[in-house]
Amino acid sequence: MGIAMEFITKGETIHCVRTIKNQDSGKDASIIVASFDAHVNRIAPHVVTKLSPEEVKELELWLKDRTNLQIRLEGQSIEDTILEALPILLKQATQALKDADHLDSMIFHSINERLKELTEALENALQHTVTSRAGLKQMQNSEEQKERLDTIKKDIENK
Image (cartoon, rainbow, N blue to C red; front, top):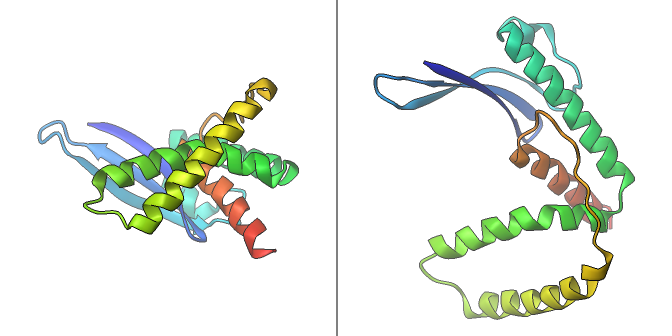
């Protein structure tokens, strides 16, 4: 049996989810083995007792990555955060369109207009591109994206 651990943020809680692959059936089973407050940046004793030593190390790295990402997001402009979040949002929007059985014509036209504007702005920005990456080791892209979206949401709420 293969075992994997993921750390997933849901609202104000971080879940430690262990996925076990049963070699006989080939199916994955995911189990929440521990949960803790998302505002805590260290591992609580009740969580340590439920994880293997390797999983504790993974969680320590994940929490460190998350803290580093939060610090980086706090220090960068909201525009940069939005632009970093955009590729994943566009991928999800593309999938949503593929899965949808219909699309409201107003939404269609609005999306189309915004994409034209985005394409034009992107072409104009091409001359100013640079390479950078958060340098995270343990966080999944989806969890990194949640942090970005939380930052964007806080900015919207403060306006």
